[in-house]
Image (tube, rainbow, N blue to C red; front, side, top):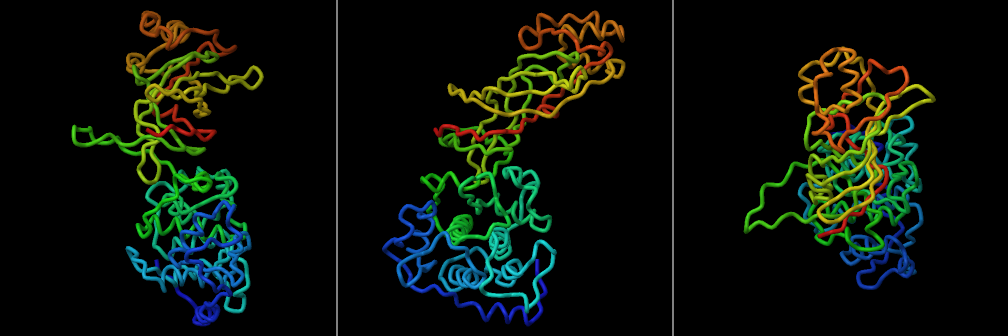
Length: 413
């Protein structure tokens, strides 16, 4: 999208293009990045003459970057270099976001723009997104679920940050789950963002995704991906494994039935199957389809008041590997048994307690004898007080979608 700028704004930015950074470190590491978390990002960019340090051979990685320095680095990387980008870097779009005030939702005036001003992490990311023309491919709010502080991202930046997350641009140190949009960006963070941006554009072919200590801080956006095509003798199966981020949503299904019917108050052990491959933004499968998830359907109460049934996952089984998992579904509330159709009954696995409710209330469930089918899948518990005519109808694919509450590291094959 194009932006309209007041001429004085553009002139003000042009006037601060030269930043107080000078000596390029093409071979030797900066003396102050040896043990820094962003060392690999910084050093790789320096070797390509894409970032420069100071005359004393320092990079000053933890110093907040100024608007003047950021403009200079963006120009050095995306304009003055010989890097081949899929499309021309849009300097006007990048400048729009470096001069945008997210608190007022307005662009700064020419008199408000100072080259010495610190730039936030959000402004840096949005400048890269705008300059590279990135747009989100999936639901933005779902993508931003990887961040514990997603609510702090302004509405004007939701799509931009989602696009950056999908493209793997965002690096969060020290806690990968927190974006900290308003925090002043450090020179190290800018180097990490830019390096990841170049990898996403196919300009650099040396991803840092498997290196330590940098890898743990690269945000891995996860999405539900279609199942891969059947493999053949000449097509090896996809590689599996990696980190599955907090707030990843896992779609599941029951192996035997479209619906489960319980009486309020019941708690049952249950094994579900992963409905679709879970993959990261680069398409690497993290959790393959048909992996097993073991857990329990637990009834929730507020005092004596029944609130609903929730599935709580305990174990994830991928092939011969078992992983502890912390994930849960939404609460599924009960409804009057009279509302349940005969078709629903025919398509469901029904617990013994639920059969009793159906038989007593509707006269349609007493004759069903599914106990031999249910086995350990659904048993019977004492119904909740005051719920004699209530049942909980669960459609696993719709109702038991799991939200991951703790990151899982899946072994790579």
